[in-house]
Image (cartoon, rainbow, N blue to C red):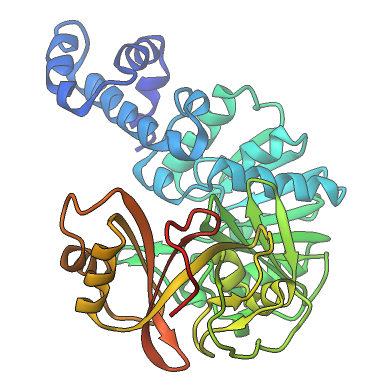
Length: 399
């Protein structure tokens, strides 16, 4: 109910939020017991619950904003990371957009980023609690003059007076994540229709969306932040058919050139692990060309090359050893190299990294570190051992 938020917006509620700020889970019972002597029990519980949500939200919004904002559990889970929302807002601003209809606005994270870019926003959500939280957040951050929040069904909202439409359909249901775009709420087909009716538009979708589901009129962009893939965006009114991978912070953007799949070649001195956004965007070939490299296997997104070349789109590792998959041989090699810290990465292998680490790395084995890749090379299960480029602790080439 909206009334669950209303008491927290009173002077007493805000004072309680200040008092419980930063309360550790272990201290909640003692804090609640003390505060209930002077405040209603329900209000104390609501304040402590909001404090927990604010602590969780700090990772997405930053502590300074999160401590002033209001959240719901679903809102924290589903809202856009501020850095990603800010990037999208700046991109819209660069396109000349001055007003946006933000459909399925949630708790207002995207509306906040758009308003901070100087863009006027109509933020729409059909859930009354969510809409009220979005309104409270616009007020808390001093953005009410640029953000109008409306509780309504987005399919019934007239967006004709806005330069652009932004749609973030709900991709979670009662059973968890929804993978079928037509099962989104609203369905992707409706969102695409709304986008095509607007001068410009952006649709936020799951990064695992099948490429064949992307309409020809759209530009597709995959965005990662700090190496983690966060979302895909379909842009309308920009470059139809273009495919991009954008890495934050930066931003650094790789625009696809429509290259064929790279050739498979023998493992060289260096192995490159492309950023997840590059892989999701199917732009591994563009990175391979930049590195003058090839694939270790036609089905594996690892690029190998003989030379070390800097690129923001992949992490480079120097490979010192190549072994067929054999736990005993790997354990012996790590003991010989005095490796005590092991990072296990896998692609194309069913082996669980933690399981392998327990088997091959007794505690206190040595001061050195290494990375092992469980993968396939030309179809054969293989272990590639090395370290981030420039930090390999052993000499010699791949064996």
